[in-house]
Image (cartoon, rainbow, N blue to C red; front, side, top):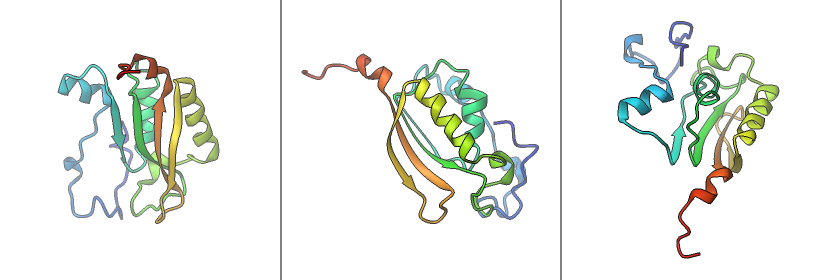
Amino acid sequence: FGFRNKTSFQGNLYAAGRPAEEFVFKTLSETMAELGHENIDLLKFDIEGFEWGLFEQDFYGSTVRPMQMSFELHTQSSNPRYVPRVPVAGRGYASVNTLFSKLYGFGYRVVSKELNRGDQACAEFVLLNVGKLSSLPSMGR
Protein backbone atom coordinates (compact mmCIF):
# COMPACT_ATOMS: atom_id res chain seq x y z
CA PHE A 1 0.00 0.00 0.00
CA GLY A 2 2.69 2.39 -0.98
CA PHE A 3 4.62 2.58 2.28
CA ARG A 4 7.46 0.23 1.31
CA ASN A 5 9.99 2.97 0.65
CA LYS A 6 8.97 5.05 3.67
CA THR A 7 8.57 2.36 6.30
CA SER A 8 11.27 1.15 8.61
CA PHE A 9 10.90 -2.38 9.90
CA GLN A 10 13.88 -1.93 12.21
CA GLY A 11 13.10 -3.48 15.59
CA ASN A 12 9.97 -5.16 14.24
CA LEU A 13 9.72 -8.75 15.49
CA TYR A 14 7.87 -9.97 12.40
CA ALA A 15 10.58 -8.65 10.06
CA ALA A 16 13.60 -9.68 12.13
CA GLY A 17 16.31 -11.20 9.95
CA ARG A 18 14.31 -10.91 6.73
CA PRO A 19 15.53 -8.82 3.78
CA ALA A 20 13.30 -5.91 2.68
CA GLU A 21 12.98 -7.48 -0.80
CA GLU A 22 11.00 -10.29 0.78
CA PHE A 23 8.09 -7.97 1.55
CA VAL A 24 5.62 -7.63 -1.32
CA PHE A 25 3.07 -4.83 -1.21
CA LYS A 26 0.00 -5.16 -3.43
CA THR A 27 -3.31 -3.35 -3.54
CA LEU A 28 -6.58 -5.19 -3.10
CA SER A 29 -7.38 -4.48 -6.75
CA GLU A 30 -4.07 -5.98 -7.90
CA THR A 31 -4.61 -9.08 -5.80
CA MET A 32 -8.17 -9.55 -7.06
CA ALA A 33 -7.02 -9.18 -10.68
CA GLU A 34 -4.17 -11.61 -10.11
CA LEU A 35 -6.60 -14.19 -8.69
CA GLY A 36 -9.38 -13.50 -11.21
CA HIS A 37 -11.91 -12.42 -8.55
CA GLU A 38 -14.71 -9.95 -9.25
CA ASN A 39 -16.28 -9.88 -5.79
CA ILE A 40 -15.47 -10.83 -2.22
CA ASP A 41 -17.71 -12.47 0.36
CA LEU A 42 -15.29 -12.24 3.28
CA LEU A 43 -12.19 -10.06 3.49
CA LYS A 44 -9.96 -10.80 6.49
CA PHE A 45 -6.74 -8.96 7.13
CA ASP A 46 -4.31 -8.23 9.93
CA ILE A 47 -1.59 -6.22 8.27
CA GLU A 48 0.03 -4.44 11.21
CA GLY A 49 -0.94 -0.82 10.52
CA PHE A 50 -1.06 -1.07 6.74
CA GLU A 51 -4.86 -1.40 6.90
CA TRP A 52 -5.03 2.42 6.81
CA GLY A 53 -3.49 2.34 3.32
CA LEU A 54 -5.85 -0.44 2.26
CA PHE A 55 -8.88 1.65 3.22
CA GLU A 56 -7.64 5.01 1.95
CA GLN A 57 -5.75 4.05 -1.19
CA ASP A 58 -7.83 1.15 -2.42
CA PHE A 59 -11.10 0.50 -0.62
CA TYR A 60 -12.67 3.99 -0.54
CA GLY A 61 -12.37 4.43 -4.30
CA SER A 62 -13.35 0.88 -5.21
CA THR A 63 -16.75 -0.47 -6.14
CA VAL A 64 -15.89 -3.80 -4.49
CA ARG A 65 -17.72 -4.10 -1.18
CA PRO A 66 -17.22 -7.41 0.62
CA MET A 67 -20.24 -8.83 2.45
CA GLN A 68 -18.12 -9.15 5.61
CA MET A 69 -14.81 -7.74 6.77
CA SER A 70 -12.71 -8.96 9.66
CA PHE A 71 -9.61 -6.97 10.56
CA GLU A 72 -7.37 -5.72 13.30
CA LEU A 73 -7.11 -1.94 13.47
CA HIS A 74 -3.82 -0.51 14.74
CA THR A 75 -3.51 3.04 16.03
CA GLN A 76 -0.66 5.48 16.67
CA SER A 77 -0.03 4.06 20.14
CA SER A 78 0.44 0.49 18.87
CA ASN A 79 3.51 -1.39 20.04
CA PRO A 80 6.34 -0.52 17.60
CA ARG A 81 7.83 -3.99 18.08
CA TYR A 82 4.95 -5.28 15.95
CA VAL A 83 3.59 -2.25 14.09
CA PRO A 84 5.79 0.06 11.98
CA ARG A 85 5.42 3.75 12.94
CA VAL A 86 4.82 5.26 9.48
CA PRO A 87 1.43 3.73 8.59
CA VAL A 88 -0.06 4.50 12.04
CA ALA A 89 1.42 7.97 12.55
CA GLY A 90 -1.37 10.38 13.52
CA ARG A 91 -3.95 7.56 13.62
CA GLY A 92 -5.79 8.38 16.83
CA TYR A 93 -9.43 8.76 17.84
CA ALA A 94 -10.30 11.20 15.04
CA SER A 95 -8.92 8.86 12.37
CA VAL A 96 -10.78 5.89 13.84
CA ASN A 97 -14.03 7.88 13.94
CA THR A 98 -13.56 9.00 10.33
CA LEU A 99 -12.85 5.43 9.21
CA PHE A 100 -15.95 3.98 10.85
CA SER A 101 -18.12 6.85 9.66
CA LYS A 102 -17.05 6.14 6.07
CA LEU A 103 -17.58 2.40 6.51
CA TYR A 104 -21.06 3.14 7.90
CA GLY A 105 -21.77 5.18 4.78
CA PHE A 106 -20.78 2.17 2.66
CA GLY A 107 -23.38 0.06 4.51
CA TYR A 108 -21.15 -1.62 7.11
CA ARG A 109 -22.15 -2.23 10.71
CA VAL A 110 -19.87 -3.47 13.48
CA VAL A 111 -21.02 -6.87 14.72
CA SER A 112 -18.00 -7.63 16.89
CA LYS A 113 -15.18 -5.72 18.55
CA GLU A 114 -12.44 -7.21 20.71
CA LEU A 115 -9.54 -5.26 22.17
CA ASN A 116 -6.14 -6.85 21.75
CA ARG A 117 -5.20 -8.06 25.24
CA GLY A 118 -1.50 -7.58 24.51
CA ASP A 119 -1.84 -4.08 23.01
CA GLN A 120 -4.81 -1.92 23.96
CA ALA A 121 -4.09 0.39 20.98
CA CYS A 122 -5.31 -2.38 18.65
CA ALA A 123 -8.71 -3.99 18.27
CA GLU A 124 -10.22 -6.77 16.15
CA PHE A 125 -13.42 -5.86 14.29
CA VAL A 126 -15.98 -7.81 12.29
CA LEU A 127 -18.25 -5.77 10.04
CA LEU A 128 -21.26 -6.82 7.99
CA ASN A 129 -22.47 -4.96 4.92
CA VAL A 130 -26.20 -4.72 5.66
CA GLY A 131 -26.84 -3.21 2.23
CA LYS A 132 -25.93 -6.56 0.68
CA LEU A 133 -28.27 -8.66 2.83
CA SER A 134 -31.11 -8.36 0.32
CA SER A 135 -28.91 -9.96 -2.33
CA LEU A 136 -28.52 -13.18 -0.33
CA PRO A 137 -30.58 -16.24 -1.30
CA SER A 138 -33.69 -16.59 0.84
CA MET A 139 -32.72 -20.10 2.08
CA GLY A 140 -36.35 -21.11 2.56
CA ARG A 141 -37.60 -17.93 4.20
